[in-house]
Image (cartoon, rainbow, N blue to C red; front, top):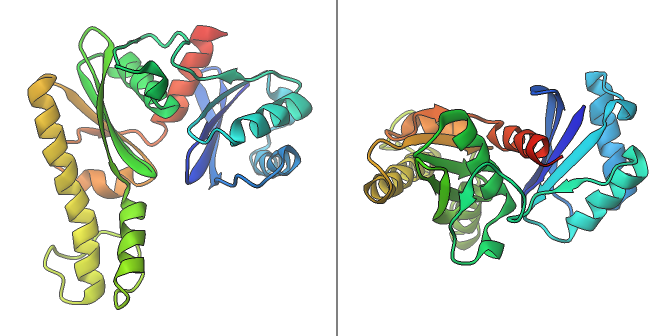
Amino acid sequence: MLLAIDIGNTNVVLGVFDGERLVGNWRVGTKTHITPDEYAMIIKDLFTFSGIEFSQVDGVIISTVVPPLLPVMTEMSQKYFGLDPVMVTHEMKAGIAIRYDNLKEVGADRIVNAAAAYQRYGGPVIIVDFGTATTFCAVTKDGEYIGGAIAPGIKISTEALFQRASKLPRVELARPASVIGTDTIGAMQAGIVYGYAGLVDGLVERMKKELSPDAKVVATGGLAELVSPETKSIQETRPHLTLEGLQLLYTINR
């Protein structure tokens, strides 16, 4: 089995694959002040609930946008699985060509998403990832990753709103009953959900003009299932696209 680990700024997403089949997946909070032993215990508990044993894991792959956690996860993999993990970098084989001015600036998660989307849908394809940041990635019909856009994530923006507007309460991120809110909570939810849906549609429309009007638009990330139904542009939502990309890259590079 393969243990795939995607380390984001907000969450660490874990997935276990038996071949190409995802047999377990979990999301835990990202903590930089934590030891390899503590992360191993978290994973052990998650495995136990799903009936998975450490001894069944014969491969580990890691992508991260949080550099301090890379040595932590590497030591955890070596100590508890006896495995040197495969690290996602711009230099590895990904099934796509990366055409970016500075290759070192391309986030590992964006490489993984682009590789997975192109392998599954072909190109041209646009990937919208609702993570700590909301990222947009463009891949051509010839499998070239040419860049994209990065916007503040939904949670970052709402947190700033709560902190800077003292009279506004913290609200649940949920679809409101209408765009015109009849109370403060409804108005805030409308602004957050429909506002981000409009942001996505606007950026995708502009990207299609530069990439292709026929580009497939795919969404992933923790809040994709909340926002995607409210957009006009997103055609499919794949919550586990990043994990699927990690499994693909492991297969290509092992």
